[in-house]
Length: 134
Image 1 (cartoon, rainbow, N blue to C red):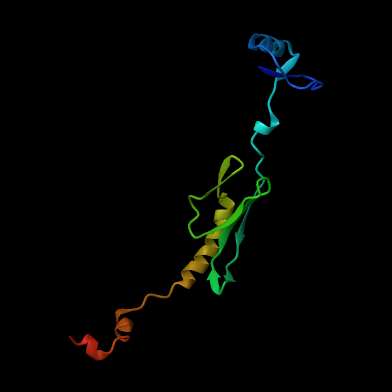
Image 2: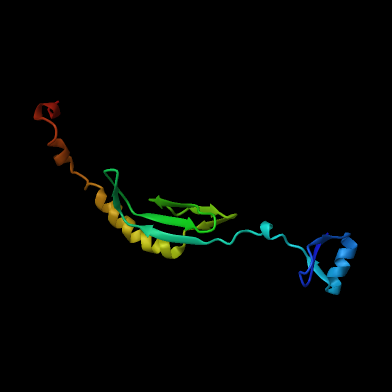
């Protein structure tokens, strides 16, 4: 069993389990926890990117994410409901306040980008009259 003295004056040491439990009960020592084995604290930042022009094409709005601890980052667009950002030993879903702020931008961009449905009369006007007379 690996122990650390309560005052942290000495380096961690190994003892037999029975003796270790007795030293912990007496308050002389405490179980040693390696700080490297603890999960990193996540420093996640979430945001929303506006629609923009990139490489000659319009790119829609997106949800951006980054972690200051592990330096992972990215942007997702479109469907994000099941997306989870996995980093530093944890997986985080998109926060609700980001989803709420993203929805109006996505609806505005994606609904206005789609052409209005054409009627059959408009579609028929694209073909010459002899092609339709069969």
